[in-house]
Length: 380
Ligand code: COS
Figure 1 (tube, rainbow, N blue to C red):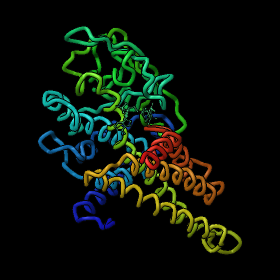
Figure 2 (spheres, protein in one colour):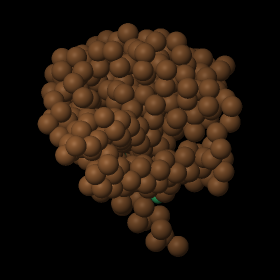
Figure 3 (spheres, protein in one colour):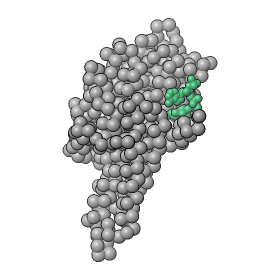
Figure 4 (cartoon, rainbow, N blue to C red):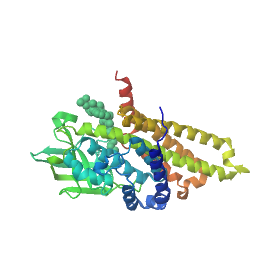
C-alpha cells in the first residue's frame, strides 16, 4: 500500500503540528493538574476546521479524508490528549454519525453547528452496567406517538458538560433486544436532563467526563436517527470509525513520549557520556521506534480502508488494539529513560503515560477489539 502523503495531507499535518506546539503546549500541565477543560483551544480548533474534518463543506465541514483526520489526531495527541479526545468524539462519533445516518433536517439543525465547532457534541452509550456489553441498555426511550420519554443514566461521557448536543442510545422495545434500541438527539437544557458530577480521572484530566441523568425527558420523534430500531447498529457503525480516531490518538501519545525520550537521552549524561550511548537506552529507543512505525502503518491502513469504501471494522480494531498497547509500552519506557525526571510533571512523560491508559479502555476495550478481530477472521 502506498502511504505517501499528498500535499494537502502534509499541509494539514503541519498545521496541526504548529497549532499543538504553539497553542496546546502552553498550559497543558496546568490544565491537567486543575482538570480544566481547554475551552479556548477547542474554539481555535473549530476555527482551524479540526472539529468537522470529514464533513461535507455544505454542512460546514472541511471535506477532508480520514487519513488527514488521523494525521491531525496524531499531532494533537503528541502534546495534549485531553484536547484531542474532543476532536475525536466530535468528528467520529457525532459528526460522522449525523452525516451518514441523520435526516436532512437533523443535518441542518445540528451538523452544521457541530462541524464548524460552534457547538460540540457527545456520544452516550455506556451505562453503569453496559459499557462493553452494549446491547444491555437500561436507559429507556418509550414511544409516545410523536415523541419518546427518556429515562436512565449514562456514564463516563466525554464532553459531558461542555457539549450542547448529545446522541443518546436507549432501549425502546426490550422484547426486540438490540433491534429495539434507538439513537436520539438530546439537547442540553431539555427539561429532565441533568449533568451529573465530573469524574476525577487518572488521565485526559482536561477533558470533562460526566454521568448524565435523564428523568422523563421528552424527545421529539424527529430527533431519532434512522429507522425505528436502528440505534444499536448506528452505535456499532459509528464506533468502528471512532476506533480509528482513538488509534491515531494512541499513536500520537506514543510518538510524543518517544520524541521526548530520544531528545532527553541525547543530552542527559551518566557514566561519562550521554545516556543514548548506552545500549540499555539505545535499544529501548530502537524498540519504541519500531513499534510506533508498525502502529502508524496499521492506523493509516484503517484510515485508507474507510476512505476507499473498504470494510474497516477489522483494520480499525487491529489499529486500536495495537496502537493503544504501543502507547502504554512506549510511555512507560519514556518515563524510565527520563529516570527521576520522568516521575515529575515538568517533563510531560508522566502525563502521557497516564493519558495512554484510556486508549485501551474507551470506544471498546482491548478485549472488545479482540472479540471484533477474532469474529471477523473466523467468520468464513
Ligand atoms: N457494524 C454493523 N453492525 C454490527 C457491527 C458493526 N460493526 N457489530 C455488530 N453489529 C450488529 C450485528 O450484525 C448484530 O445484528 P444482527 O442481529 O442484525 O445480525 C447486532 O449488531 C448485534 O451484534 P452481536 O450479536 O455481535 O452483539 P454482541 O452482544 O455479541 O456484542 C460487540 C458485539 C461486543 C462487538 C459489541 O457489543 C461492542 O462493540 N461492544 C463494545 C461497545 C463499546 O465500544 N463500548 C465503549 C463505549 S463507547 S466510549
